[in-house]
Length: 503
Image (cartoon, rainbow, N blue to C red; front, side, top):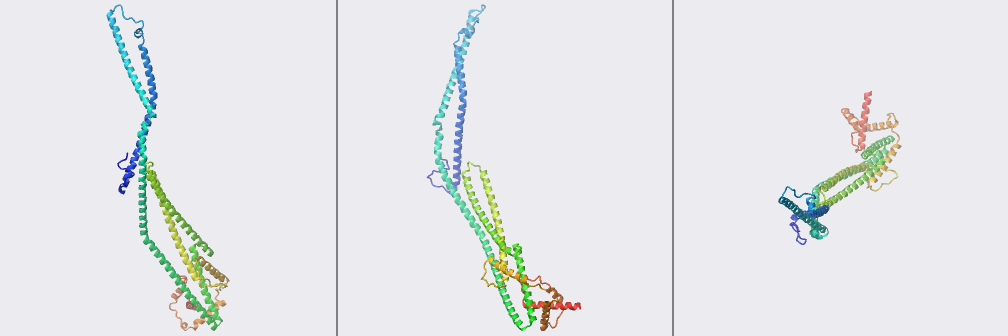
């Protein structure tokens, strides 16, 4: 019963190259044995059905034969006169006795022939009846006699051993396939890691480089702020010295210069806040923390969705492996097309999940970039507002968190807003008292300087164009006292020129 490609349970394991061929031969042998058992069972059932269908016809034939036999026996017992016809004249007066005897002998011979023929047919019918009865008896005995089932039973007795052997070989084959698939997966993962390693390192270097540049920029802004603070302190000290030496008009001029610097500072801060609002798409200042919190929540939900996609990916891979094992087990029972369709569906689902994962990663990277930009804006704003001190509040410790920086900036901006609302409106009238004092002060100072005694009007058109270009200047530039003086001198020149033209 063992096929040429099968091995005994105790035999040594063959080479791995012939393992698939042997498993195919064993599967083919099991399939042939199952088909032979099915064909044998179908043939036995067909024979039994035919015999059952033949029984009524045999019984009817036996009844017919018995009736014919009874009729023949009855016919042979009839008298001669009934056989040759009653009232029939055996001879006529014209015929001789010899002729009559010959006719009678011929008729007797014919009757004997008929009887012999009937007896021969009767023997044949009886033989056929006996043969059919014997065949019927054999069929009836075959229904109960187990001798007919012995070959199939013997074959079924030997089948479990071969099935156990096949199960063991299939388990070994699946283990080897699983080991090979895991080895291939590990090799693929190593290859992908080797390919993606330089890219990851390059991205890390770029990120570190960008962070270093941002730190340098923040440090430079901090140094610039410190230098500006020192300059302001020097300016305050110089103004205090000048206030002691100068008159009340000089004091009014210093206040005007400080007010102009403060207004420029406030304009710069409001511009920065508008940029932050436009970056976060907020209409009010107090909506900035809520928008940051919403972005953080969206990033958290996005990361959670990415983790769920990864888990679903691993589950789909596991189900794909299980389906491959089931395909190997149900290869002879289930058509291959259904498993292929399932495998294609699972692969399509896996590809869709991978595409969604890539989209989520791209969205997460965009959100991270926006968050980094917003953090840079908040850091710059915090550095710019660092020199503003709120009265009644001590200098806080080093602020680290983004929310703390936002709260600090919000307090300082609210303070600036209150100061701006509390200030009286500046008069634009040229005949006002304040404007007149500032003008006289500036004229006096410019008149005292030796370099302003002679005024040249050679490049006044270009100078006028340059002075009107305030909107193109960088908002990060904070004018010093010397720059303010230069701008005042330029304004004086323009006013004197206009007066001369009017005259």
